[in-house]
Length: 456
Image (cartoon, rainbow, N blue to C red; front, side):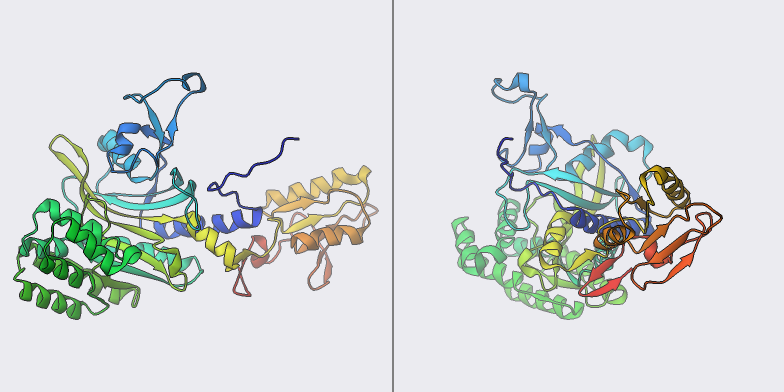
């Protein structure tokens, strides 16, 4: 057999890890559905030109090419690339199906994406992503900018892996201040991109970058001072921004509109999920299509992982002639969460097998009888396995115990005897009939161990 060469950046979880991933996905689907979002799926490939239009470099996009075309050089309109996020496919999906969709269109999507970047902790070349968006037709009310981060925070909290903090900002605030200190639209966009790097390179690095872009010392100082404002109190945040703007002579309508929206978002967060939403004015989101609220989410206690969920308001990601489809959305890196959960042992399935019952086999000639019992239990929705070999019952009990299967079923073997089922945890063994016996609800499905406590 040829020597195996593992590929980095393409996670393949063991069955226990996959069960944890499925649990997170089920939780997301449940919460999203409770809030009226519908699920869609889109194809894995998009035209390369559409993928690059978002600003990603060609080095990060995997190009799809047939083997017989391997010698062909260059790219054209027919070249396809694997999707690197779920936003570009959403824009195309909305444009293609606009006549059949109801707006506002509330959608969620949980699928794989691919990026050709250097693998490292929490970053993969193939990973699972979960997106939540609301798309409007021509306009989209501001209240969706409030709803989206709260729904996402609710979904993350429901996973049972710890607390989360959603850091929020509004790009209109920064743009209003930048306009007031004499930055044009292009310089303002450059400033936002440098501010977005604050956590990585620090204030000195950002200041140097801004100076290199032609900003004056005063403009650099105001930009950094604005980015340093944060807090949970809406009034205090607004006061700090207005004080800075007043000193800089930067008050204007855009600034006031952004502050009104930011404080409304924080007020709603305090009412519905106290302590979860906080203002952080260095959150800029470097992509230029964001136009209002922007969000980044950190996992409390796991801040080294960086943002695990981010997004914002966009007004012109999808357009068709004069018709626009504004939206607001957030994206979760599900694989990033799974990798850290597994590494820290924060969440694990309560048993290795999904089966709640193992039907013992008396001997190989009677295996058909055991299969019949298993079929009866499965028909009633009880996950059931059959012993692989007709070994001594002690060995079959050990087989079930190693896999965490809580019940073992012993066929009677005829002569008017009654089948029996044994709870291998307590040792209790009782008569049972496959047509009527049901395990406790807590044992019917795989549960999860969280921080040493079994939670079904």
